[in-house]
Amino acid sequence: MPSSESHPEIRDSVARLCQGFPGEYWRDLDQRQAYPAAFVSALTESGFLAALIPEEFGGAGLGLSAGAAILEEIHKQGCNAAACHAQMYTMGTVLRHGNDAQKQMYLPEIAAGNLRLQAFGVTEPTSGTDTTALRTFARRDGDDYIVNGQKIWTSRAEESDLMVLLCRTTPREDVKKRTDGLSVLLVDMREVRGKSLTIRPIRTMMNHATTEVFFDDMRVPACNLIGEEGKGFSYILSGMNAERILIASECIGDAKWFTETATNYAKDRSVFGRPIGQNQGIQFPIAKAYAHMRAAELMLHRAIELYEVGENPGEEANMAKMLAADASWEAAEACLQTHGGFGFAAEYDVERKFRETRLYQVAPISTNLILSYIAEHVLGLPRSY
Ligand SMILES: Cc1cc2nc3c(=O)[nH]c(=O)nc-3n(C[C@H](O)[C@H](O)[C@H](O)COP(=O)(O)OP(=O)(O)OC[C@H]3O[C@@H](n4cnc5c(N)ncnc54)[C@H](O)[C@@H]3O)c2cc1C
Image 1: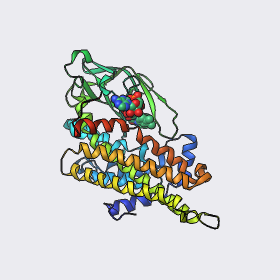
Image 2: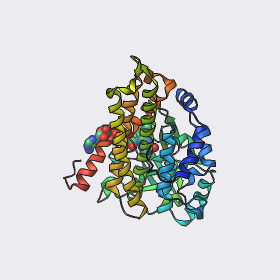
Image 3: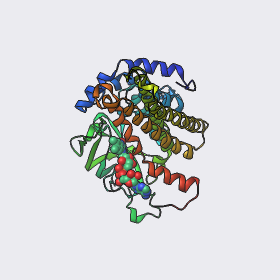
Image 4: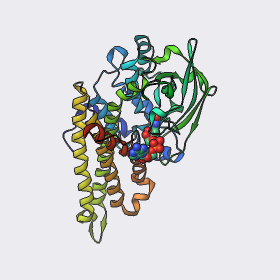
């Protein structure tokens, strides 16, 4: 595997932690669609989930490259960080745009593992990708906002204390630009769950702890408004590069797991009296997927480099996410095909990882929308929607 991997000590200790959570652990959870609570606790206790929180708030104060290394290694080891990755990028919304009181109140508790900020409520059933068409509305009432509406695909809501919620505070017809009038609230779900906040799990093809949530006159103290009212869309956008980079890292980790698993199997499995890996029909798809993974990894490293020197790597972060998601999907396909019938058997973990990595063609942003971004913002073509 490539020697270009940064943060070798972090990767080593993540790999050691992951060894305590082998395939059987994930298979059992997958069957029951249960949350990997022990895995998330171990990651929290070891401080990995607080890697990006600044030291003054009790975190490790590391750069995005460290977060990327942690998530990549988790996936490379056959585990799945989807149960907790959001904390790494969602926390950034509070850190960058929250006021001092909010940061002092929440970040140290998140860093210590006492509070979980895992839920990110943006997508709605009717608006989908067209975020500014969202309908969830927060109306100011004295010292509170009263929130009504619905979100879908709010992953980990049942496993989180806090939710970063994007909602309208000014109706779309009353704003000049459709991106205006949206605001971010930090919702303390402990106080409203089961009352004005209803959470319903959605069963999906992989074990993802995703839900739909309903707000019914839910009161949120106005002091939980992040930044300025009406400017929320720009706060969410400002976290997108980090999110794309971290998800791309998971895809690179998946692609490495699939490539290694396929290679090992191709060496071991003998048919017609020789290893199947001796056939070019088996070698080439694995080799091609490996080459595509390495190319995507270079783009990812470029995006991280630009991000860490404070530039805006919108182009590179989007391309890294798309290329890495494509590479992991290609590697998944090669790995499953290499395993023949055994690729479909749960005990090999290939079909589980195959289902898990498919998500990244669609979420958190679909491939089409990345292509639209490149067409419009990089190539200067007319906006298509
Ligand atoms: C398991 C899972 C977990 C998720 N977790 C979260 C979460 O925690 N928080 C959250 O807020 N959201 C979450 N999402 C939502 C996710 O971000 C959306 O599913 C995704 O952005 C696509 O939106 P949509 O499903 O509404 O698709 P739609 O917007 O309905 O789009 C459907 C298809 O049409 C394509 N399409 C739409 N418009 C265009 C266009 N103009 N040009 C070309 N193609 C277009 C899309 O690419 C897509 O393939 C999650 C989704 C899943 C499946």
